Length: 329
Figure 1: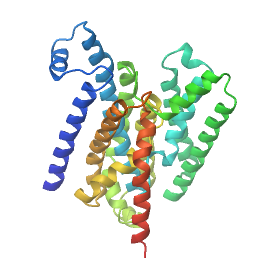
Figure 2: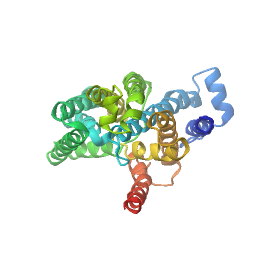
Figure 3: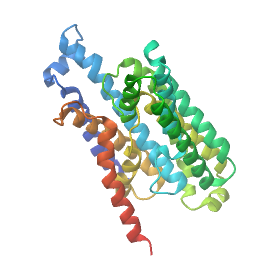
């Protein structure tokens, strides 16, 4: 427990450093003194507008989304007892992407600025509902297969929208959104996604005891009084709300939910409940750091956040597969 507490303290310090860097970094660099003054006495100066209107909501969104992805990944891996599981496993991310693409395709995003995240959230909840309805009563494997089918269906819908995009601009806007980004996000996006992420994370945390029991196997979990059907429903609903809201405002951001639990597990042991909080904190820190990196990497235009997390996460994924292969007798 003491080791886990030290780990949490280290992650929190790293997260605070990443938050400060997020407030400092950009095309216009701000000094620490300007940041402190802007937070203490907000004014109408350009630096205050950049800090409070652009960078602070962007940093808060990165923390919320990273925590949602990290926590969801830890719960999915505990629920399925599969180290390769991540939030998109149940089709939630694909549903959110399809909902947002529908808003762009039919021009709703141009008529109403927040049509994209709202329809993305609706798509996430709808996808999660379909996954649970199809996989209900068939066990964890059936739920995973149902989620895979829903993800494939949502991916087909996105591909269809790109194929029949009404204009090159619509196709470009869809593609850019799918790459994932936190640029130009405002307090309205924080207020839209924040409550759903908080509620979803609360539901995910409530599964901690059941996940510990599930690590012994489904039969043993039932003998300990765990309602597996209820646990799956809560986990799916929590992931749907948290990851759906995150995807709806930031686009598709991969691998954070896969990587975060594996980074903390060697330090806290293999008890699923002990990985939840550290995974959320590591997810937030990773996404904050990646978002800062998108602004610092010298490219012609800002590299998209989803692209960067994929470039970082893919080598880790292959390493994880090779490690599992070596461990298999």
